[in-house]
Length: 340
Image (cartoon, rainbow, N blue to C red; front, side):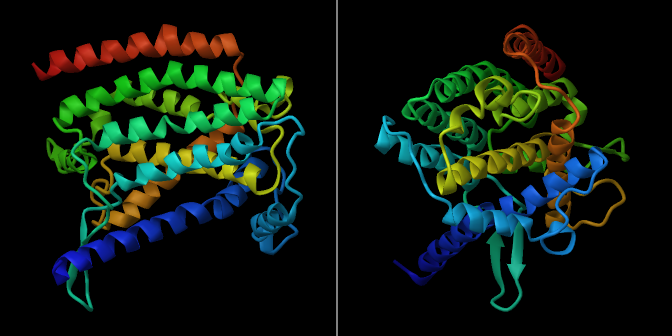
């Protein structure tokens, strides 16, 4: 193995560690931001006492979860009960092997060109949709292994919800693949560079407005966010699939949900809003625009959570099968006719 190969392998390992550390620490700022967003929307302060404006509240929560007693129901399947949170969390992290955060940068000191992604898969979007969907097994197993009717119902709801909305979510991406003529996320972003008529961004939202609406609604259901958080419906299921979990096992489920929300935001930016492409008449600072766009969608998910009421389960199923699925098929037909 020559020195260049060793350097490439070392860079990949560094990227994996760096991305993993970011994903593990994301809930710390996001939980604080979400509580503050809720507070401002509901005209209250939110976290305020632990640190300036409550900024250390997530750290206090983390310490509490680390030292809290880790209990399990007496008749639970102990092995599955322990490992179900990991079954949910690992696929949520694994999708970032194919997600690009930018194209290339040059490190000044060593004058080495580095790509801002772990791997440019030629079937990147298929990989993300396939691996991301595996997380639901952790939720199902957690609900079943808890030996609780409420937890089991939450797990079953999650599986039915995933099946119903995964189809519409996948079909909404087909229009983007058709217009970009590639399954690679990097190619999809590159297709969106430039302008239309000199003043309109060449983003897929221009070509795929219906696809974006379907994608966004289906993504809300996929990541179990209000108004589609039926697997965690505290009104009828206590806390749903994780009702019997405590301490760090509970935190792994919550970590999975936050990472999934970030993933949905990242995909929305890459597929429909030009990725790291700068808006019109703005300086080209790729990583800044990428983070800014993703941050906007994260805020949007939080805003919706504290604005809309929860749907009934029959309404959830009706929206998925009777509205989003036919619309996604119609969008594919319209895209095909447009390309012809």
